[in-house]
Length: 257
Length: 311
Image 1 (cartoon, one colour):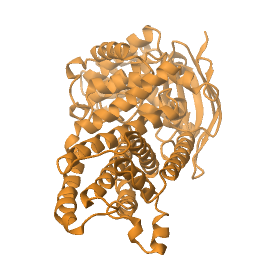
Image 2 (cartoon, one colour):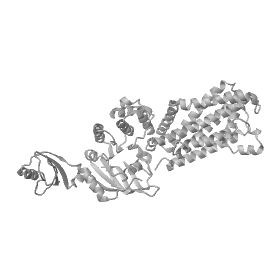
Image 3 (cartoon, chains in turn yellow, orange):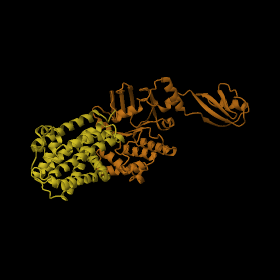
Image 4 (tube, rainbow over the protein chains, first blue to last red):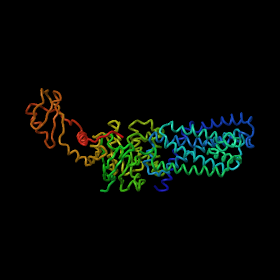
């Protein structure tokens, strides 16, 4: 397949993904706004005023980056896992397998679809945050880079989950039992400096902590973790997952007999 | 004439150890209309799955218009359009989007994809349904949608896996007419079907697969010439007590006004009619008892005795 044809095929998959989640916007774009809006109201405004400052910032300011990140992680992951699993379930994955598209085009199309939903939800939630506080961004390019890289990483994670999923239960197990706990324990609502040393070390084994802190640095200019280390970690995980996804696709795991 | 599809020693062993294909060879010339017949579990869908990239082969080689699938699978796939047995499109997408998206997956630019989508939706009689969600289409329309989708990149080899299963007679006839026209335009067609009348009517070549082996691969007319005996049903004017005797023919009584007679190839019917006339029996009408190809198919499969269950 020529480069131009591959580009057309990539656009086709990407546009189909965007069409899919915008068609069902009530299920994909609105719920994260409601959930995050409730966090802003309850933890930011009501409880946050009693908690006082965190790392020198108002509690609302401190939690907003983590909550945006949480929405991006959840949505980029769930977009790819549900969309790709559905193509398996409805057997329309065969449309892609009989076509001459290289496997990496399929993967990139799905990943960019997941990233676009993650970033769309991130933008909507950020817009919502502006209603509750004056939003200051310390470094726009770090904010953009971290959120984009994180969306790529979790889109890839969603793809792996979908490849192995054999039922609708299988696509909700990882988000429920792994992603949500790791996100809550990833420093969204607190600074790990508040924890005893031993728990700080345990927390540092949680990759989401690095992403939340790097993203918070983009907003506030403060982080529990060096930003460079976070970026390297996200890049290494993403490269590893991309290679693994390609291996699965080339072997036909979960998609070919 | 050069080859549209060349299969050499193709084997497929599933992970459980079931050998679905036992080293089949099949040659399909360009412009051919081939029926691939066989009982359930014979290996038809496995063969089609391997050709189209849905099933990994265990060994052997396949070339599509000279392009080996191991060396140039992408090039080979461009030449193939596949209409699967089961509906495999997104039930929530619009008809036109399904066809145009498939075009995009073959790298067709948006403008060309839109033109082709319009062309094939018109040809398959689905243009009026272009904005419908696919799940609201009737069964026959869904089949036609899959054909339109398979043709949108204009493949030179079209493979249809039981395309008329569950389709009413009128629609089946119109689908046959469309496939004949497509074949006349130069598209090589491979068709699997359980309707042997369909194979006899449409296809110039027939391959029969059973137990993972090709047991017959020949021209349809050559295959039909193998039939030695045909059975006819005769409706007679007056009731008879017993089956009349006719020299050289096995005549059986079905009911008082219906007879059944076996006629050996080249024996002719004139002798039979004149013998019945001498006994005062007038034949009002006559018809074949069964589809000739169906009889032959059953005898071949029973003779092979290799039919196995689906993996």
